[in-house]
Image 1 (cartoon, rainbow, N blue to C red):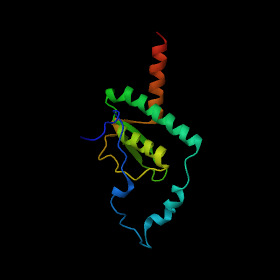
Image 2 (cartoon, rainbow, N blue to C red; image 1 turned 180 degrees about the vertical axis):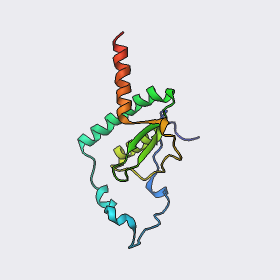
Image 3 (spheres, rainbow, N blue to C red; image 1 turned 90 degrees about the horizontal axis):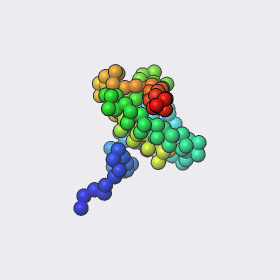
Image 4 (cartoon, one colour; image 1 turned 120 degrees about the horizontal axis):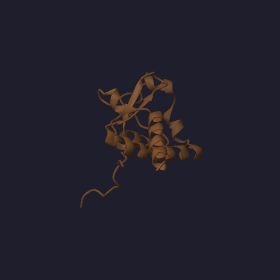
Length: 141
């Protein structure tokens, strides 16, 4: 027997215990200490309104991907408020991150896109406007 089948487009979750060890574990000079203790945040479940928003984002993401991926768009770009840099997320990576946030209440760190072509990514606002335009155009007929 092989792996159990999953619906297309779903990503298998990775258990925390199979991740590489933290190189700063038990290090009093761990630079991540400035961000606070992750263990405190793990006990806080996401609220009902956050869950509703995440489910809506996942639904929207599926529509945006269906409309834009055939046109060569690889994913979504998000301007990061922490580092003031754009973050490029392929469709599957963003979906996996949102699903993980929904399941675990947080996202694990991930590798950014390697040498992304900014022209291959669009913003959430662009996606929303494109989807609205397609919907408006289809309802006109």
